[in-house]
Picture 1 (cartoon, one colour):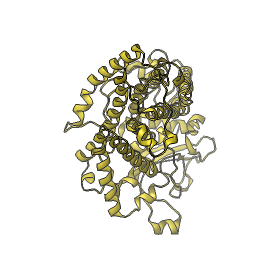
Picture 2 (cartoon, rainbow, N blue to C red):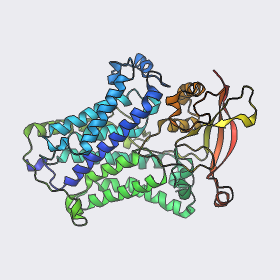
Picture 3 (cartoon, rainbow, N blue to C red):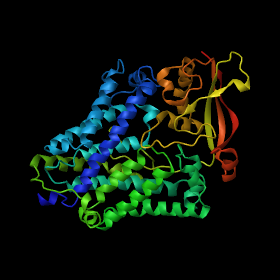
Length: 474
């Protein structure tokens, strides 16, 4: 079956399988550390309440079957983590093709169970992106067989939807993308700045315009070249990787950039890489493709081709949807990011006090791990790890009423000094003791200038603009 096998893509398969598996490791670690507090039986948005009102047909998940406690969650998480680590080590790939296929399908099913009950804490486009990538990775085969062309094309189609969807939503959305001024604001107002974001923001204005123009080229022109013959496809992939690494340096976007980098390797040919860095190209000595494997891949390819109608239509729609799933299994979705740019940053600052009748000087601030807090605190680098509570706080600062459903219970957990909840924070000002009161205020943030940084040693300048909640007690 020479027509079925892509002989020049051994490196592509290695990176796709192990890279996707690494991101599943990150995802399941985040589930273990955050899901029980956010969504467990005593979580801010408990899964049992969700499954009681949403049928399994609308959100397929193991947790519809049983969620009397967090034991099933831990079993799902540890199983997923162990399987993902096995793929990273290359163990399933050494067997017949059904072994890595089963491993990735189990990973996909377990994480689908988490995402489908994750509510606002899992309502991000990169959740669907990771699910779809994991599903496709199941049909890459093992070291005993060649890499199927059909699967590689499916990966490139996924990458094209990610990049082209993001480029089109920008052109159709905020005028700041069209007049090339988007980065005058974005580094300052993005959901979770990184340690270098302050410096990116202070780059010269003309350079920001060059960045935006280059972004348009990378997202609107380069994706089409991924489908071109070699070596054009490989160099198009390199352009995607370089752009994504630039984004990694400039902010924290969970694993969005990293999964896009992994997907880009679906277009990287061994011959091109061998001419530059021969040591990176794995030796290939595979046997014939089993008939059953070819039939399965062809059948899956046919199903994906049918499902592609919805995202393809969306790309050409004037009402393009961003990060939309067209089925409950998160396959063949629509992707995109930052169709609109926020011009100013408003943050929710949570404070508590142990004073029964507090004055203004008695309040102390809870510090979150990733979102901006005290002005003198330099933002940290967390991506590809996803801080779901911190992202929720960003949406809350945008005025999202959907976030209030978990935020008030979160304040109650602080009043209880709930240890699992406090572990999600960077700093508890009361060292595990219960406060008497908590409150949430709204502040407008901006980056400090070079002069303010030198004089006051602050990365942010903030001023209060209002109250989100009145002081609250148990």
